[in-house]
Each structure stands twice: as C-alpha cells, then as structure tokens.
Length: 119
Length: 119
DNA sequence: ATTAATACATAATATTCTTATGTATTAATT
DNA sequence: AATTAATACATAAGAATATTATGTATTAAT
Image (cartoon, each protein chain N blue to C red):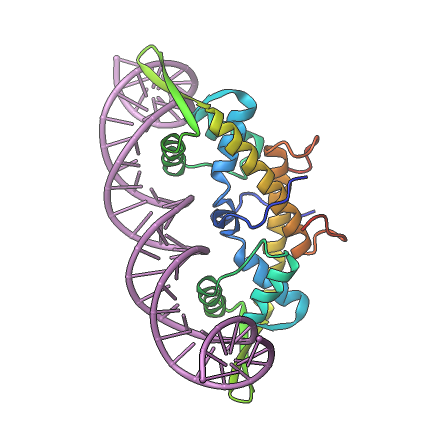
C-alpha cells in the first residue's frame, strides 16, 4: 500500500465544505483554528487546511445558512465557535452521502476494486 | 445506500487528470470524445466531462510530457488519439495511488468506516 | 527577550472548472 | 431532401475555490 506525505492541493479541492460540515456534525461546536488542527491530526498531516481556505469557507457557509456562531473570549483572545443550523445538518448529511457514493464510483472507474457497487 | 444522479462539480475537481491518465493506462490509446463517453457510460452519467474541461486538460498533459498523440482521419473527420508516455505511466500510477490513499483518509475523516487504514 | 503557537481576517494571484461560442463532418430522423 | 442529432475538435469569458502573502493581536514557550 502506497502512503503519501501530503496530498496535492487539487485533490482536496471541493471536499473542504464536506470535511468542515461533518466535523461540526460529529463534535457539536468548533472554532476555526481547532478545525485545522483536528484535521491535521486525524490525517497525520496529509490534509492541512490553510487559513486562506478555511475562513472564507466558514463565512460562505454562514452566509448560506448552514452554520451559525457565537464568540467566546478567553481573556482578550477571541474564538468563534461554529455550530450547524438545521439546514446545515441536512447539508452535512447530503454532502457525506454524496462523497460516499463518489468514492464507490471512483473505485470502479480507477479499477481499485474488482466489482462495482452502485456506480 | 444513497444514490445520486450526478455529482456536484466541486467534487469532481482535481480528479480529472487522474481519470484521464488511468483510462489511457488501461486502454492504451483513446481520443477525447471517446474519453467523455466512456466515463459517462462507466459512471451511469454521474460524471460527465465537459469539453471545456477535457481539451485544456489534454493539452496541459501533453505540454507536461505525460501524453503524446497522433491524428487519425476517418474520411475528413479527425481524431486525436492520445497515448501515455513513459513519464505519463509513472504519473498515472502515482495519481491513482494517491487517490486510493486519499479515499482511505477521507473514509476515516468522515467516519464512513469503523477502523482506520493507513490514514 | 525573542520566538512559536494560537486566533482571527483579507487581498492578490493561480488554478481549474462551467458556460458559451465556434467550426466542421457524419449519421439519423422527419 | 432537409433538418436535427451526434461526432470531434477548439477556445474565450467568467465563476468558484484554493494558495500564498500579509496583517493584527494575544498567549505560551524558549
């Protein structure tokens, strides 16, 4: 089995929203920096979300009504804790479902499995 | 199991080169239009490569030295049959390996599997 | 006292895709 | 016979999303 150190950026494109929404779904509430660190740890550094990608995405999710947030102060430092809205819960589930389906299709297309699921 | 009609475009971003290189690796030589139709059929319409995405990508792969081509004429109609170069063979294998690894990581991250492989 | 880590944000740039448009041949339909 | 659909290439304008760089500021570690 091949193990790579870090994925090329193009591979991660398009999965950022899915990752964020799913983490919020599983953990309830998280702040931006926490999301980057959690993903980095869980993937052993293979996926590193940059701040330039993260914050605009969070703002975009908020604008679309998938997440809300509340500020929390630790001394003078601020954290923005994000949570899923009801709509966000649905979006998160739909995104994960779609990605799971996508994996099956790609496995078939790239011949990574002998048989084809529902692709 | 959820089955979707067609993937959102963002999901497919970044996998186009991998798909093309792998198809060329498995089938030897293919022309552009053939690639779009093959992918469409193999994925039951879930992945439809547009011409605006395909041709620039093929030109880019050629410029980088991963593919070569030769023109073939059927009457007056032209086809450009693409084949992998030696370098392209390596690129194809590396891309597929990376994607296979990426699938494992994402499965773990999205909790689509109970255990973690090498992610 | 300096550096690293935490924590947010945005702007310029690059990449990559969608959508639209263009040309042209061949097959199928009416 | 004439029109439409399918085949087969190509490129340009625009949108979306990421990278890289920069900025501010607090707190912890060296």
